[in-house]
Image (cartoon, rainbow, N blue to C red; front, side, top):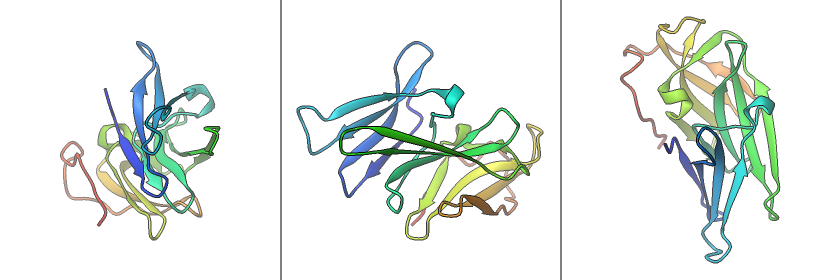
Amino acid sequence: MLHASTLDVKNQRLFLTVATGKSTMGIGMINLNDKEHGFVVLPENPAANQDIIGMQFDPTTNSVVSVMQNTNKGLDLHSLSIDAKNVATWKSTALPSFIGQLYGNSGSVSALDGANGMLYVLGGVGSNNDEPMHLIQIDLVKQIVIGSPLMNVPSDTLMEMNFA
């Protein structure tokens, strides 16, 4: 199942999650300027924090960014940069522990304010699966959560976000 895709407008690259096997995933990158050799699949390695489900392209850092649930009942900010030779560089940063649950189809419901370097995802403050839904605001430059206002909607109702 395709969970997410994002576009690097400047370099004309489309990123999307792809199945690389029955139970394995990867990140597909389509270079829209290279019609003959423009598709590359980068395998994911969840054990090394090299995976992305929901994604946004951050033009400031020239990387694909995503928030992922970690094994410590917290959230990690994952980023993937790909150079001109298609060499991938992964980064993972643990976010504050008070954000315990990732909502929005495992983080695929997200929005990016690229002009201000802010990523928005849905999550619960705490470790229970039924925590009230919050809008989590992440500063991508500082790699910290700077806000988490409570949303007055059930956790299974908001399935899409966009930043305009």
